[in-house]
Figure (cartoon, rainbow, N blue to C red):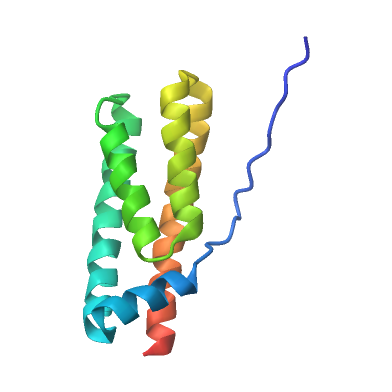
Length: 127
């Protein structure tokens, strides 16, 4: 039997769904939407820190709830890649494959950091 090794890209770009941000602005108004995006980014930062702590400690008991919250907030503000990778980690958590979990969790932490910085940079450019 031959082992299959999948190479995961380390330089993956953050992808956004601008339509989701537009929907949020239409629903809440520009000012409230901007506030909600800022709060979601703060929550995402905390969730990513909590997930990193779970990774270091090896305690996966709370990871399901953390991942569900992360996917929800990422979808809310249009962070498509972060939401997708968060769902991938959730799937790996329940697959019982510790190697896949470790790899996808590491990817989530990279993508999360990159995504948060990209949206803050976008905010700095737009004003």
